[in-house]
Length: 185
Image (tube, rainbow, N blue to C red; front, side, top):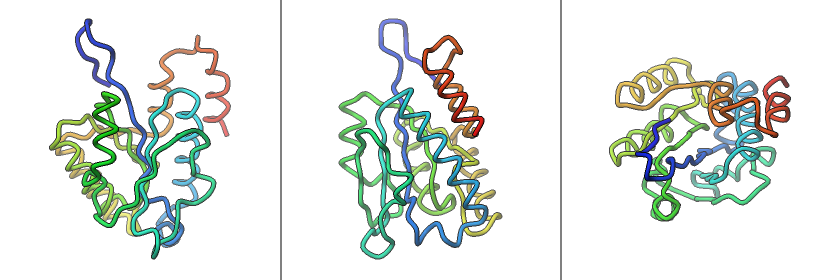
């Protein structure tokens, strides 16, 4: 993750959980493994950091976020009709007010809402980390091609375990044992 000059505080992170809704998830390839990774990422993130945003695509038709992936601590829920979360004025106001420049993104579907969001966030100058094993599409090819396209445009691709340890930074942290247990699960 990039950091600014010594005089400024390090750049802050936000975790964006995109469209983790039952009707979107049900046809997804490898969904159980992806949901487990999102759960690990969310649990660890709630211990180590703050600023969690949960989007819901057309919740009246597609339902709410699945209950086990609703954050236990304060978070911002954004309901949307646009595929891109980057269209949300509420989101950008919070990112701006909290001086957040790093976005950690997971959810569904990689080639639709995630890809459109990521491409717009990159255009707006955000550093975007896409958690490849915590997102998915109905078709594996759509997922793979979307990852390549986002990577080509400047997103950073990583995995659940890698980003959790990156946020944790050191095994000296008092939270490390708890984090290690989440990852080992």
